Amino acid sequence: MAGYTDRPFRLLCREWGADVVVSEMVSADGIIHHQRQTLAYLEFTKGERPFGAQLFGSDALIMAKAAEACLGYQPDFIDINMGCPVKKVTKRGAGGALMADLIKAVQIVREIRRALPPDFVVSVKFRSGTEINHLNYLDFGLAMQDAGADLLTLHPRTVKQVFSGVSNWEHIANLKSHVTIPVIGNGDIKSVDDAQKMQNETGCDSIMIGRGALGNPWLFYQIRQAQKDNNQREITGDQKLDSLLRHLDYALQVKPERLVVREIRSHLCFYTKGMSGGAILRNTINHTDSITELKKILTEAFRQ
Ligand SMILES: Cc1cc2nc3c(=O)[nH]c(=O)nc-3n(C[C@H](O)[C@H](O)[C@H](O)COP(=O)(O)O)c2cc1C
Image 1 (cartoon, rainbow, N blue to C red):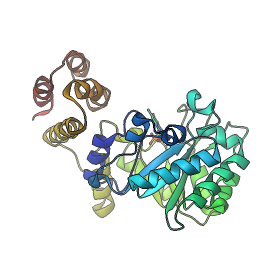
Image 2: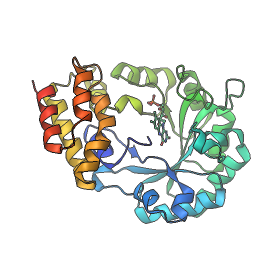
Image 3: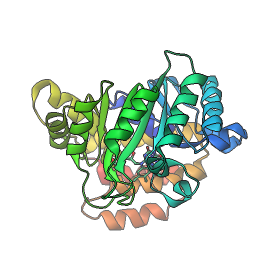
Image 4: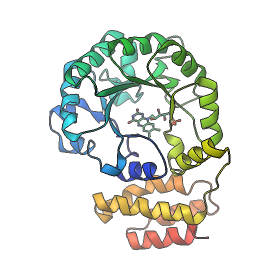
């Protein structure tokens, strides 16, 4: 997720039991123009493996060149973003705009497939359609499979919906029953119950969690444990604090303190959501410039 699933957060999610993590979406144009900031999105550490690099773009040959360049970073797979609804992306014909251009979407997968070794995994992430009167996820998924995708992820909202309403998991079940390659279900999984329900209702091969992991990376552990014995695990304040401090330490390994203190605020908003005194806590955090001070505030707030 752009702005959130950076290296520190991905590592934390893996430690809490996520099987696979994916980069923030990376511009194919930025890669082929060797933009330093873009290339930095492709970096990851061993602890994050299996790691997927997600590309967005609209030109098949540029996407293929970018995918080839990605190999230098040795990701475990490449995911193609064909679902992003953000204007900045769709107005360039990329992300969700590709759902309205099946021919181009097919060309992109074919060219990327051609550019990569035959056994290298390529996945495609897309939505239910461009809008409610144009639900083409089934034809789209079948075409991606025919073009050479190894794996499909469906977020069953339309591009027009952005994040409004609820995701329609029936679309995941329907896609799963029509394609032969694995299908990952995504959309609105916020709890252990949601995860179990998604798997039972759709028969998907795996689930993908986005927003539900923000401020809540232990959700992966809770789901994994419940799969083993059907019991829900509470996470204590001390466990949360330990995780939060690790999040900060991982961030400090890749960025200077001044940036970490500022950038971690968006994550801390999620971590402190619903806590009593949360608003005051967030206000204090937002006025803190030192990591020592931040750690002290968090310790006082979360320690039990
Ligand atoms: C802030 C934000 C950034 C996102 N960035 C990406 C992205 O870079 N690539 C992507 O495939 N999806 C991105 N998404 C979409 C999520 O991956 C996911 O498909 C969507 O939020 C639905 O799943 P969820 O309910 O588990 O969050 C983003 C969503 C949000 C809210």
